[in-house]
Amino acid sequence: MKIVFFGTPEFAVPPLEALLNSGHEIIAVVTQPDRRSGRGRRVTPGPVKVLAQQAGLRVLQPATVRERHFINELEALKPSAVVVAAYGQILPSGIIRLPRFGCINIHASLLPRYRGAAPVNWALINGEEKTGVTTMLMDEGMDTGPVLLREEVRITPEDTAGTLSAKLSRIGADLLLRTLHGLENGSIKPVQQSGDPSYAPRLKKTDGMIQWSKPARELCDFIRGMNPWPGAYGFLEGERVRILKAAPAEPAADAGCRPGVICKVTTDEMHVCTGGGAVSILEIQPAGKSAMPVKTFLQGRKLREGMSFNV
Image (cartoon, rainbow, N blue to C red; front, side):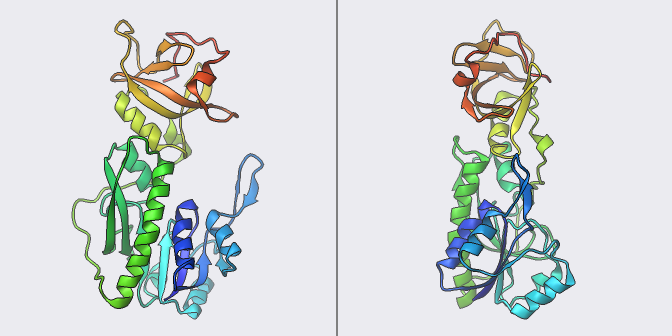
């Protein structure tokens, strides 16, 4: 097939690598415009653009995919299929209806569960025990098109949004090649989605604020779902810190403390009361510093029981 690939972040790299190693012809890669990032706010290309340039592929970076001249450019390329993996913009009908085999999206959930921009994060935040990858034919709705293939994946207690996304991306790359092969030989037929849909809206930095009034298990799932971005955070005695890893813990019998209050602190442990139980902070990142085990964080700090995170 002659394929135009749409993708931007790290999640889209394994699918593009899989296509590069297949017999398909990638005639162009479409990715989001370079953004400013990092402390220096330097303009930086996304991971997909870096790989595409290394492979000598044609790279297109429209400000919006609805630009008429961009759609004309795609029409002139005459792709057999368009593949989309975490591109970052909704495609208009003019593109969706263009290729013979359609626009194939790699979505990191078992549709119709977790339609939207952040399915990996929300599956973890909601404490799901399984998720998966779906390849689907795109239509004008938000992840509402017919399903082509699906693969289920178990979520482990150690998974974060970062590790789970990487796992699903690799599975999605294999699923993509199987999907293209099945579409080419006619062995795969699109099937309309069935079941009750749920949604995974895009996250903002402010969404990472920890609500200590929630139960311990929910908070630990929230922290996993926010790692690495946008990051779960709180204000410990006024100092902003990110919490990267935590585990449920039993509060001291005589703690009687409010949510957000430190109920146990030693040289290598810090427990914080929640709306139900307590959490043991395992990995933390003070502002402007690298992530560290809580034992390292506690060295030289005069924290004591009764101090609190601002709530």
